[in-house]
Amino acid sequence: MAKVLVLGGTTEASALARLLATQGVDAMLSYAGRTQNPLAQPVPVRVGGFGGAEGLAGYLRENGVTHLVDATHPFAATMSANAMIAARLAGVAHIALTRPAWQPAQHDRWTCVGDIPAAVAALCGPARRVFLALGRMHVAEFAVQPQHHYTLRFVDQPDALPILPRHSLIVDRGPFTLAGDRALLQAQAIDLIVCKNAGGTGAAAKLAVARELGLPVLMIDRPRLPERREVHEPAEVLEWLAHATPAGAERGV
Ligand code: NAP
Image: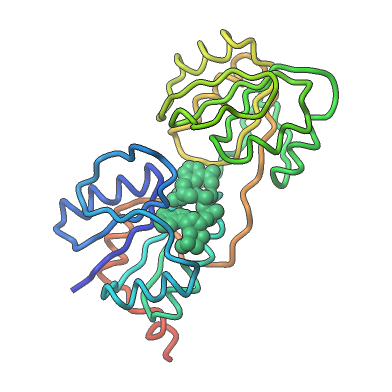
């Protein structure tokens, strides 16, 4: 019988957990532990890192996991790479549940950059009012561009205030709406949005508002990952569960 470990922290992971629970699949959801009050889930939850790829491989073996679903955020590149290695080490079947990247539409004013340091560098120049839509991580890296006013939106109230000299902090949890993001961008008089190409619908409203208001967006591209089996819908994971064999068996080793 299948025993599934879902690496989570995303809307897609929660949707998959609901589906697995309704199907009576033996599943566990794993969180890194970044948010203080993660949403209640219909499957058992474990929290915290595994100790790298070796640690995760040990966890998979010790807990009799047969299938590993990487449903982490597209920017959680370390975890995703570790998941691939660990599945191979433990001989466990592996799949990634991902969201397609956002694509620019007509009237979008995107500038794409490769990573966070490139986004920081692109902010040199006169003071602007920037919506830094990156969550809590990486905010400190923008302190070298202190001329801007930054609007930040975090899931939780931080223990320490962000070190950016000029900022407004909003504590809110997605999914975000068109009306809500329009009100936020207008109230904060935003003239530039900086965000990651997360994909999905939960954080897409700000891009629609940017298009509507003609605002530029500095879009950070996704980190590259090695080739892996990938699906975009929780139902496709179910289908895979019915047929997948462990990693070693697939390769005939
Ligand atoms: P990361 O840089 O790829 O991972 C750093 C370390 O955190 C991993 O090596 C692992 O520790 C631990 N970790 C990450 N995801 C985990 C999970 N689901 N369960 C248990 N341990 C996990 O990841 P990150 O970018 O910090 O993201 C952390 C979590 O936040 C992920 O679950 C991700 O889905 C979610 N998230 C990330 C973003 C983002 O923009 N990066 C946005 C929204 C949500 P060990 O090596 O000790 O195992």
